[in-house]
Image (cartoon, rainbow, N blue to C red; front, top):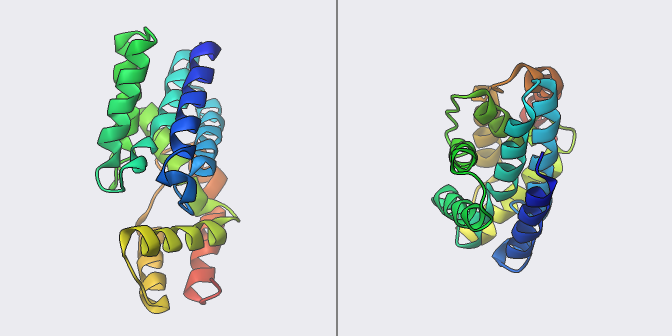
Length: 196
């Protein structure tokens, strides 16, 4: 595990995110990035991924939403550009850069991951769907969409949108299913009964 590179990536991404519009975003901020990194580490461990793959995943997790500094639409493409430029400058091997970029690209909605590594980062990115903090995260996302994307919803529309998304969503790894599915079902029930 190249801890020096990981630390440099962390410092770079934190600096970029916290000195941009992202520091004011209620959801896609530095806290979300840190959460995705931790979720990736947790799931990668439970999926028994090799050390180098975990390293690539951690790096991809730090970079995956950095493109939001310019806006939501197509931010994954910009995230990939930032990752490629930074890692190339650091002398990170090309074959590993390719894997980092493929992991970032996999997080684009609708998610269609192919490799186990891509499945892990996709599950890490949406792990909040199956956590007890879902209500707060979901409220933050709604605020972000309203304030920064101009997407306004009535409570009924928001409930319908979320119930539909939660019910159609499936985690890609066995570890995520085991860890998050039960709470996700509870979150759906709360939404349907309008407790959010």
